[in-house]
Length: 174
Image (cartoon, rainbow, N blue to C red; front, side):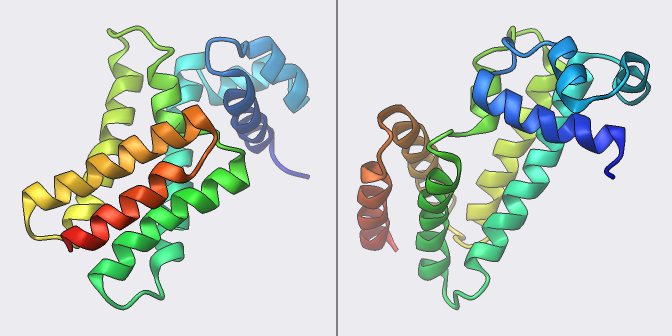
C-alpha cells in the first residue's frame, strides 16, 4: 500500500491535469486520495505547498523522461531534434495536456511568488538544457523559444504540426 503522501500526490497529478489548479479543492484531493484531513495537513500546510510539491515532482519526472528520451542520440542536432520528438511523445501520452507549469501559471495571481519561482526555475532549467548543447546563446534561445511555442501551439490545436515545422527550422539552423 502506498503512503498517504504518495496517494495525495498521485491524485493531485490527475486532478491538476484534468481540472486545473483553481478548480481542484483540497477536500476533493483528500476524498479521492482516501486520506484523513489531518494526514493531508501533516504533509502539506496549504494547497499552495501541495502545488509547489507537485511542480517539483513534475519537474523531476519531466526532465528525467526528456533525458532518457535523448540519451541514445550521439550528436547535438539529433539531441535537439529528439527533444522536439519528446513533445510529440508527451502529447500522445498525455493527450495534448501541454505544460503543467504554464497551465498553473495561467491560474495563479501574479503576486504568488512561491509558485511563480518554481515555474520560473523550471523554465530556466529548460533554457539551460538547450544552452548545454548550443554554445551560441542567440541560437540556443531561438531553439528554446521554438520549443515553448511548439508546446503551446500543440496544446491549443491538439496537433503536432508546429512541432514538426519547428524541427524543419532547427534542421536549417544547426
